[in-house]
Length: 360
Ligand SMILES: [Zn+2]
Image (cartoon, rainbow, N blue to C red; front, top):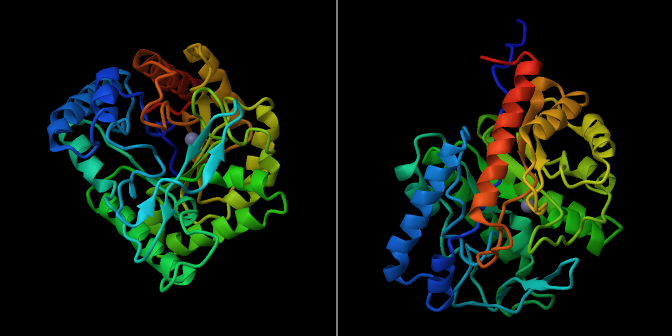
């Protein structure tokens, strides 16, 4: 049987949109979980989804308006057995972000991301995707010294169970895709050039992914990027050649790969061409959130055409290089700018699809 001809080039966002300033003000001066904030979160989510849909984006997110304080620690923020003095990520401009540290067992999520999906799906008229944090990122919560009465092995068992639960809840509720944020993959190569840390992250995430069927994995993806916070990165100097061969060993059906901000895109595309597997869809980044200019649809079109030289159309998709505000308090990009860039992605991808003969 011939492979059915694709009817479009799929295009999806990564997740975050800068929060409205008044919401940031209310949250930083109070408690992020204060029920009095609910109508303000809801208003921000409703507005985000309306504006997302107005760009023509066939898939939307809630802009992570309620993910506090960031894409990585939303699930554990405020846990009574964690302290905000854990692993520190250093960015290229000198600023840092600190994750949480587990102080005692057992480890449980404080909240699952399907709670965000519930709200988003009430407002959306098109499919909604949901990003979740990877087990490898949260594994950094366990301190170097053993926690008395709660071994690292017990922690990993609990972590994997919580992560699987979160993904299943999102899939069961109808998430278009569940995207596992794996920004620490490229960072791992920077921290440990031997590759051992990266390999341990890949193994851990694959342990989790192995619990899902191949049908389920077609709705699960992995996002990689060099970090994006206040226009700075944490691992852009790591060559993708050190990351992508291992990345494609992950048992996920979709990969969301930052590419627009790379100095040599063809170098990266050649690596993707060589190491991608037949059952993997590659969403290449065609928008750079940290570039303070809006890409034109024609520029996006040309990036898609370039990528199509290396990735078969039936395996190609487009995305943004990263979320536009992975951390709650980051307003270095405006909401207007984020939606203008998303619109360029959608239009440019459609222009390329037309030229490549993949119109419905
Ligand atoms: Zn990212």
